[in-house]
Length: 252
Ligand SMILES: [Mg+2]
Image 1 (tube, rainbow, N blue to C red):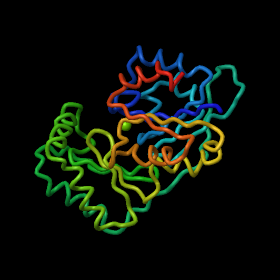
Image 2 (cartoon, rainbow, N blue to C red):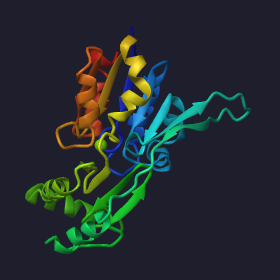
Image 3 (cartoon, protein in one colour):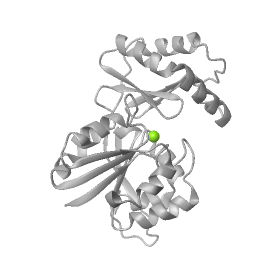
């Protein structure tokens, strides 16, 4: 039985929203040699490419971006530069329910957090990404909100409120400061039913993520895999843990 590896990006292969550590990038490239590896991230393809670099991306068998709402697979091509072209295998659309954006604006207004930088929700493929601190926040501001949220669990409270009102929509704490919003089922677990259902019957599938605990954005995929005898999931706190993990037996 061969192994298929799935990796989250933020907090698993890189620091949140940042580029991969150079030393780890080299380690990862060596480890990926002759292994079947896929990326399953909340970020867009362009951002994942920027974070991991083309070398790593080109060594994968595919990239599930935007929570698995769009899947890019390399097209085997014989060209002189050796660079890969990518095809989109599937793509989901997200239709926001009536009143959702109004409610998100109200959440921002009502939040007692003092720094609000604007640009609070971003439409992505198959989902919306929402944050109280706003997408214009710099690293320091994001970090401050992260600490605030750790203390006050503001995101968990917002998720609770919105879930009560919108029963066909899922709200999941994602990344360090934001909430991912999407149709129920259009989370990372969709990669199994949409793409790996058959492969899971005859291969061992291993997922590594930093937000496996409920309601983290790796939870659904970890659960989907762990329900199957061939699937397993590993939770890390940071990319340094993943670097250590790759040296263990399970990843040999
Ligand atoms: Mg993550």
